[in-house]
Amino acid sequence: MNLILLGPPGTGKGTQAKLIADQLNALHIATGDLFREAVKRGTELGVRAKAYMDRGDLVPDEVTISMLLERIEQPDAQGGAIFDGFPRTLQQARALDEALAAKGSEVDTALHITAPDDEIVRRLSGRWLCPSCGAIYHEQTHPPKQERACDKCGSELHQRDDDRPDVVRARLEKQRPPAEMLDYYRERGKLVDIDGARAPEEVTKDLLAAIERATAGVSN
Ligand code: ADP
Ligand code: ZN
Image (cartoon, rainbow, N blue to C red; front, side, top):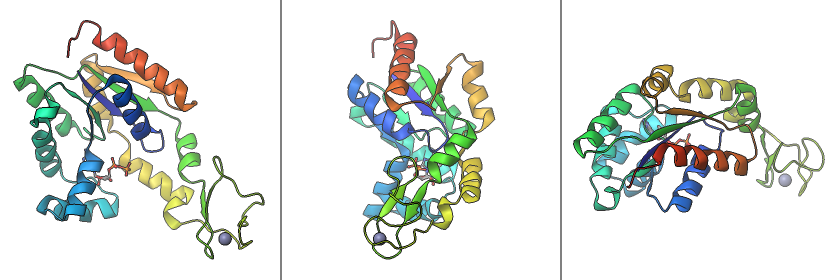
């Protein structure tokens, strides 16, 4: 079974991918995690990837694809995987299809978690930090008792530059799944849209139902 999770940042995609992998006892492959591991180990791949990651840019296809193809050749990946953060470009999508076809396998379904831009910006830009004691707040999930004041020390809270709504919007534009890649899966009848602007449990339930429909009759 090969599943792909697609979606902009701020939709809880990574959390959902881990949950579903646990539930289905499937392998979870997250390219972001693979890159972070490579950076930590200081490998050549890590050194190459780090500069792009630090800027919030995509790592070039050539590097990303060869890392992913290597990963799916490992013995633990022979039963398929849940791909999280890959593919992010049309070229990556094609490369994955080719590699799976060579094993007599294919992508069963591409689950696209969606949310309105305003909701994404609200989720990603709600973080406030205390410059004095380092406490972290979030407008939705962990608001301070008094607006803009630290619960612990009373200092005025600040927002990091990259958490500001305008910066978040720019990041969203860079990281949104490209339309041509969504079309690629849609044209092949593989794309399923899942409304991500709901409680996480609701999203999980819909994802599992969509997987059930897509893999009925698939044995591995
Ligand atoms: P985030 O930290 O936004 O959740 P990830 O953990 O998925 O994103 O990835 C972290 C970084 O790793 C990305 O910003 C990007 O630089 C790189 N990366 C991950 N997956 C890919 C990919 N499929 N193609 C290109 N770059 C990638
Ligand atoms: Zn404080």
